[in-house]
Image (tube, rainbow, N blue to C red; front, side):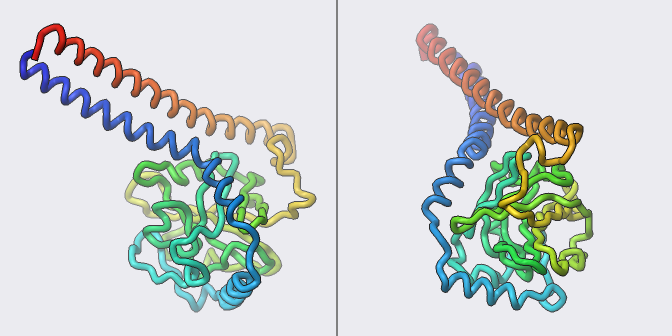
Length: 284
């Protein structure tokens, strides 16, 4: 086989190989997140009295005005107060957003390392254990190396359901609205009296420069009475139909990615086989 032909095959294999690796990595992370979350929550167990007391003490001292919140997407060296409550590298729980098929670990502290693996509780806001007059802010990237992260967070609208799982408990929240703020407009993250709130914070738009921050604001609902099924989450036939359509669309994109991964593997294998046959036919 001529050297130019060999070089052509090498270039082809490198290109297809990189594409196949990236697609495989994305597909694995999307379709393995259910098992990872279930395995972790099953092993975590209930919260100890000592940990509960440390969290209550931390949350009682939260003051957005005095803390001076730091934008987690523009700072790599952040001192993590929240992470001192548990092991700095430990997972506190899981954030689940069914509509966009999102299940990622929650870390205490929105550091660079934490946001590369999941979502992080923004220092200076409450640890997400619930409670009226508290607001926990969970920050996450709008896409990261080898993971889509909160890429589809813009698909969330009022009455969509968000879950926080930790230590054998599930806190249920419903989206009540969204806001777009500047990277320093932290007044919008203050707690609201008599409301148990969760805010999801990410970059906007989805491409650089990320000049704004998107806030998805959620309010806690009673887990014993809340109807969080797909058909009733929006309260009427038209909106529930749209919610079901959006959720189906999100799932469809995930399966399209899986299909592309399979196609990439087939193309790679076919070309490797062709290369081997050429060597056998024409010799080295």
